[in-house]
Image (cartoon, rainbow, N blue to C red; front, side, top):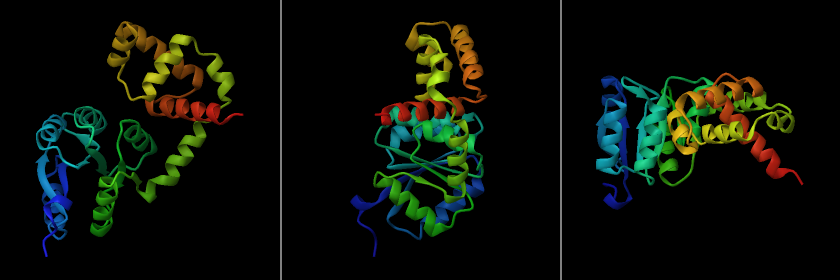
Length: 223
């Protein structure tokens, strides 16, 4: 019996590998409650398709020919706030997962996932929940814990402008967007960010973002 159209989850697939797209199409035909409404092979095409098709869920690869899936996720969430984004990728490294989370993604799955588990994840995300592949959960938690440093002491070493830059990095803003938001030049933002990285002893934007969130949460929980 065919699922009621109103109850179907409208899905957009964004992946540059034809075999992956075709395989997903064939697999998902077994679940009538999932309707694949479109495909895209690049970040730009994925953003355009999301705007045109208004899918419930976007299933996105992390690396695309014309850019990062993380950047595409930010664009899609900005243009289509109701759309949920799930990364389906072969990359299990912690920094990729943290970057995905801070880009506004609702899920992160590895391509080795089984069909039933994938459909369950899509449904879960469509219902407003988030999901993280068990294979990367512990690694990400360990990664976040490793960033923990004496927060108050380190943050007190940051200037007011550096703290503003760090806060915007945690929101997933690019250097160009940060420059526009703070009325600074692109070069000045780069210099501030370099100073922040050195002071909090990180090397990646995702680590800086995770540091900021952890310290903000610890401050909020303090009596």
